[in-house]
Image 1 (cartoon, rainbow, N blue to C red):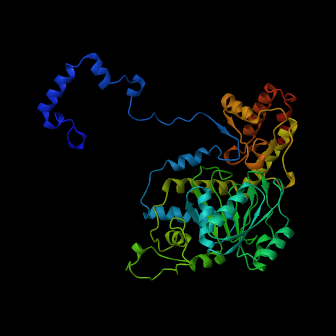
Image 2: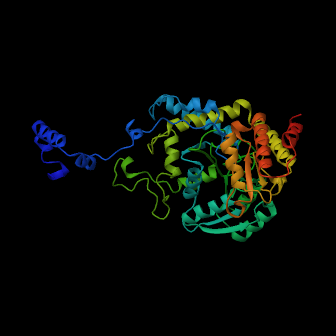
Image 3: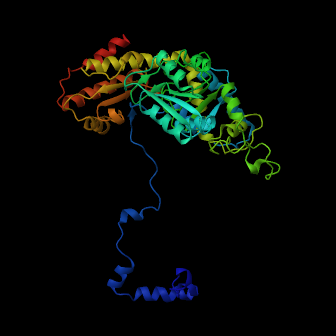
Amino acid sequence: MAAGGRHPEVSKGWCGALVLERRLHNMTSVEQSIQNPAVDPSLLRTSVAAPIAPPPRLLMGPGPITVDPRVLRAMSAQLVGQYDPAMTAYMNETQALYRAVFRTTNAATLLVDGTSRAGIEAALVSLIVPGDRVLVPVFGRFGHLLREIAERCGADVHVREVPWGQVFTLEALEDAVREVQPKLVALVQGDTSTTMNQPLEGVGRMCHRHGALLYVDCTASLAGNPFEMDAWEVDVATAGLQKCLGGPSGSAPISLSPRAVAVIEARRSVEAGLRADPASAEDTAPAGLRIRSNYFDLAMILDYWGEERLNHHTEATTMLYGARECARLVLEEGLDATVARHRRHGEAMLAGVRGLGLAVFGDVEHKMHNVVAVEIPSGIDGDAVRAELLHDYGIEIGTSFGPLAGRVWRIGTMGYNARKDAVLVTLAALEQVLRRHGAPVEAGAGTAAAQEVYA
């Protein structure tokens, strides 16, 4: 072989190619089989994969959910430049729409490019200076996630827990805040792992009384359950599109109070390559205060979304189109009406699974509207039931995590799937599968119970 891995005769140009062709022609069949091993003919059809063609599915789990077709249509629009006047207008409109969804007047309301976890990370890494004391009340998997992220930010994390299936009282939260004296309280509103909805009224005021900021992860609850950012004095809230907002995962709405913005601005640093003099220390926070992520640096992201339009990243235009449409559709329906729709169809699903004789996990009085945790009956293979629902009916429901893995199914009624036909079809299919697995289920009892809610 020649240098670079080329055959010496191939390197001689067209005459070399003729020599090589003659040699190949004179090979024995054995030699040719060695040089050209048999290839599956199906692999020769094309050098690329086939076009994406997802099977039809009704996503009735805890998220993601079936995306509203109007959101998909919005996301099919062509891109424009990130500083095109049309693009900056869409950004401004998106900010205004999410102020209404969060029920806030916060100027610092925008999107973080990434899944809902990107919003959580951006909030915590931008608020927490290493060594800050942070209180994380945990009542499910996603409280543990807040604890882990805060620890990775270098916080001195203090955890308080209640059993999964319960929530905290305001008194218990205040006792913990009084004892820990945190700079930040990081709390989940709706934890889909347990389906619980933590009451927030009075929590922000209590935190402020003790000198703490309040961060809330409302990924699973926003637009399906009441959320009042300003009235409840929440300092930072983050969400995602893939639950009650009816969109795909990939964009994280976030809103920050003036208190939170002041903390973040005190840590503000501008990238060297954006400064007039890259060697200058101007607009650079002290090393100990500097936000420990570039991508999730909310100080720079605020500059990008603000009047300065200081370059930070290239906005995920298609996701912005989708996020904008999600909020637009919620407000077109009316936020209160959207929450009421989730409440109604959630109540129908709850009645339906009870009508099938299934037990519901947790404190139902504090359950989110949009998801229910159903205890898997004794002797029933929970994963087999889920697989049969998916294979035979195209319906997906969820299992859970940690101590609830294999103990419950989680059934969602959220976003585009918070509607009557989706509820009734899911209940009818679940009934048939349970009967085939030997569960003592009364025929038609689930849909009948749901219909009573709709009557």
